[in-house]
Amino acid sequence: MADLLEIALQLNTDRSIIHVDMDAFYAQIEMRDHPEYRDQAIILASDPRKNGGRGVVATANYAARKLGVHSAMSSAEAVKLAPNALFVRPNFDSYRAVSAQVHEIFHRYTDMVEPIAFDEAYLDVTKSKIPFESTVALAHHLQQTIFDELTLTSSVGVSFNKFLAKLSSEHNKPAGFTVVAPEEIRTFLDPLPIKDIRGIGSKTVPKMNELGIYTGKDLFEMDQSALLSHFGKMGYEFYRRIRGVDDREVEWQRERKSIGNERTYGPFLTQEETVFENLHYLAELLEHSLTKRQMHGKTIVLKTRDEDFVTETRRRTLPDFIPNDADTYYEIAEELWEELGGFQKAVRLLGLTMTTLAPMTFDNMLLDLYGND
Image 1 (cartoon, helix red, strand yellow):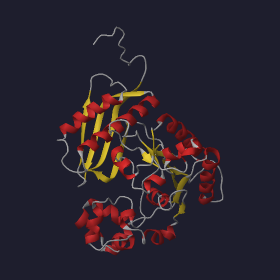
Image 2 (cartoon, helix red, strand yellow):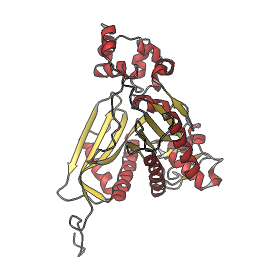
Image 3 (cartoon, rainbow, N blue to C red):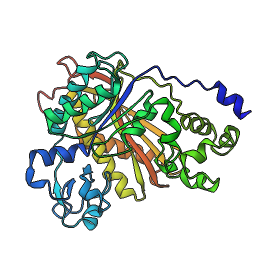
């Protein structure tokens, strides 16, 4: 049965996909622009010693990460781990401007660019704008161009699908460059610790360990029926991905129907106070994103996923466009959180999104001309 299933899987190797992930992007920009930061542990957040202990870490440089600091951690916890670190207030306008420069470089090579965030994207270079002798040569040129023009390092993964390209870009950070060809799938995936394989969360790892699955090779040797039995529909995805199968296309022509951010937390958020801090941070990101694009909307959507992978959403639609204001977004998000029942289990994901979008024009802006309530 397993042999028949394996024959049925089609490994599409016709595409050339690159995943670019800028290294500690926000922190790297700060260190580039402020040379005096370079030899210090840098945490991008408000200093909790100066604001009553509030705030969430946006990111940290690698020196701070070695001390245990990570994004989405409360600033108060970060200062305990790294009391001598330098806290720098994030400058999202600067990061957005640099991100635009990075993406402009991407588009010199191909228009088939799928942005994932300010600091990462997939590129389909199967038919690139600039001829190169190989995809590897193109990817090297791209990585070097980013460094030469912006003095920023990136980690690059090259393969024939998104799963392997993303996984390979994470393989040797920072400033990494990893290529996975079709004949190298087993060499690449077999030795990987199971926790490092995309799509396998920290809650799933112990379950796999109980089944004797510790590496990619162990997972590859599992029968599909056993994976389905233990992991449901995700078992089939595990079966496909560990064989290097991923048919998702680089989505470069998506019409934007919503604007927002969601973040996956590891370790999970285990206190409601930290949930609220992260909701406020997501509200600030949403304000920045909508303002940049000169958009606003009428519907805010809160998405949560708990430690057991239970995902829930709640939405609030107002009759008029919601003002582009982080505090307003946060207040609505807090109300939606309460509608979901408040804190019950550890949280692995939070998302805050605006939909029912429209451009901010004079026709649809609400102007308080006379200062009335």
